[in-house]
Length: 95
Image (cartoon, rainbow, N blue to C red; front, side, top):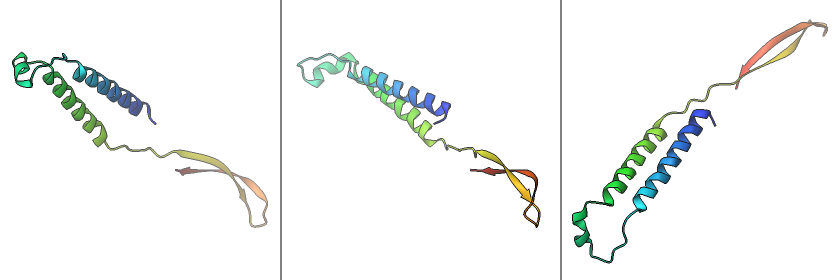
């Protein structure tokens, strides 16, 4: 896993934890919903955090990941038609 992908994953986890913390903070009152509605609190922060998390998460997930090919080089013996080694040659492959 590349360093940038690790950083983005850690940022997404931190944002998710922060969103869950904000969404779960609220007062526990035994009153009907329509009596608490005039306070304008609780739901706005939770919905905003959820929307932010969804937007950032979808932006991270939609980025294409391009794996760079790995170049591996080895020395190969060169032989003549009689089977005698006449030198070496470097051969590289991309995996």
